Structures are given as structure tokens and as C-alpha cells.
Length: 177
Length: 86
Image 1 (cartoon, helix red, strand yellow):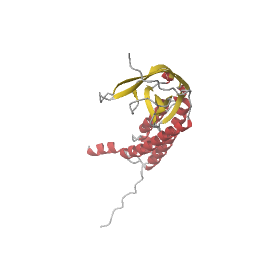
Image 2 (image 1 turned 60 degrees about the vertical axis):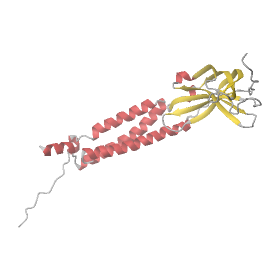
Image 3 (image 1 turned 45 degrees about the horizontal axis):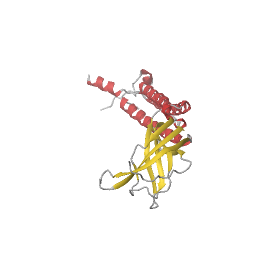
Image 4 (image 1 turned 180 degrees about the vertical axis):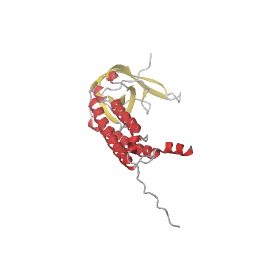
């Protein structure tokens, strides 16, 4: 502490240690504040059409088109350490071959608490296709609204906000007339 | 001229001043950390936390780094040199 250089050195070392402790404490508060918001998710309509796969134009592929309604209040998730929310609607089903599938068909990033009151009448944002080319014989699917809280400091936390009460079956694939 | 420049950039303070500076910096930083965390947590605002912490850090640097005269109030008493018999 005898020269200016020594004082700056000592103070900056202690400052960075204190800053790291502060950030660690902030990260730990993520585990203390754990709200569980709920909402509703309904499927308005679902249709399945055949088409050609994007890369291999000779390959037949079935595409599902989904319209859904969401209403959820996710404002409890916005605490001091929340930077943004990542919401996604995913379809969970078992296909004819017995393999469990989890397909994300819609997502949204919510950056402010004011935008966290959700009332959405949406359709699938991303192509909903079955990897084994056909939805035939697939079990009825459950559609869920899940969220991922992205903090400023600390670990990511996940949760499920809404789920369809009864599973929704896939209709027969129909040609566009 | 060169010695004046060296004295300016060194900014020496005496031992009592160094003890004071050590005490001030340690207590200020620990208090600032605890206070900024608690107030920010109560107000649920990360901005408040880092505002308090940042302002405390800058204020600490202003108080502690320059060689203020208050840190030079106890200069070292050197012994008078003994004249050596050749």
C-alpha cells in the first residue's frame, strides 16, 4: 500500500473477490425463488397432408398442421435474476414403431414482465413431420407449453406451464382436393 | 525534475496511512457487497445492486488511491547519521 500502484493492485484484488461472491449469491437466489405458474393449452384443429420431403423430392412425407390456443400468466417467473423467458410448445407422442417423439412446433422469447401474460391463437411455426414419413398408427399426442428461465447470473431452470387434458389423435392423411 | 516526476507517480504514504487505507478498503468493500445484495434483493432489481456496488467501488478508489495529505501525518523519524571515524 506504499505506492499508488500497490494501492490500485490491492483494492482491485479485493474488489474482484467481492464481485465474484456477489454474483455467486445472486446465482443462488435462483433456487430460493421458484414460482410455478399454470395455464391452459387447447388444440383448435389438426390436419395431416401428404407432400414431398424438402431435400429428396421423390420421397413421400406426411406433414401435420396444428392450430392451438394458449392462455397463461407467466409473470411470477420474472424475478430480479430473470433476463428472458424462452417458451415453447412441444408435441409428445409415440409413433407406430414404438419410439417416443418430442417435437417443438412453436416458440417465443419473452423479454419483459408486461409481455408475460400470454393469450395466443397460434399455428405451428416449424414444420411438423414424422421422421418415419407417416403419422399412420401413431398414438394420440399430448401438447405441452414449457418454459425455460434464462437468468442474468446462474443456472438455467425449466418447467411446464400447460398441458392438453386429453391426448389429441392424428387424423388420417387427406389429399388436398 | 526527474525526481519530482517519480515522487508524483509513486504517491508514497507513511505506515500509519497504509494501515488506515487497508482498514478503509476492506470494510468498505465487504459492507458494499452485503448492502448491495440485500437492498437489491428486497427491491427485486439487479440494477440497484450493481449501482450501489459500482458507486461504492468508484468512491473507494477516489478516497484510497491518491496520496492525500491525511495519509502523511506520521512521517518516518529517521535516526541522525553517525559520523564515522576513518
